[in-house]
Image (cartoon, rainbow, N blue to C red; front, side, top):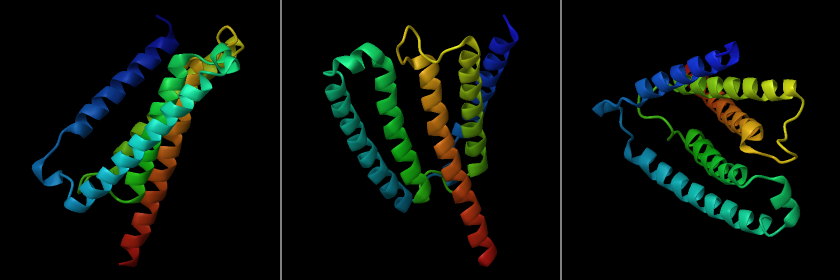
Length: 172
């Protein structure tokens, strides 16, 4: 096993442990009624964005240029990532992404770790010479670009939310 694979496996293990620690729930840290209502709206918006993405995929797959140059799995994951991004940004901006008394900085760390791991994978492919596999956009490495961009956007929204909530607390 080379160093790059070892680093990738170590990063994945750290992410898995972090997610497991973050997913432990205490009774007093659940969502309140307002947050549940906002999350329901976000799920609805995410669902309809997923439907729109799937409809766009159907149209794109009728185009021979798309079929010849883009892998199906990349398109499917792109649709999922669009829906996730819409859900996450809506929930974060409406204070419904985190449970009460939950620290958003841990999620920011996870997002940055995902961005770092995916950027490292992309850089490895750039070092090999091309981001296309047999002339096609595929899940690896172009999916890594998609994941990195998605989680970078979520990280920026989280950072803005952390900074604005900190400035609002200082004003009170």
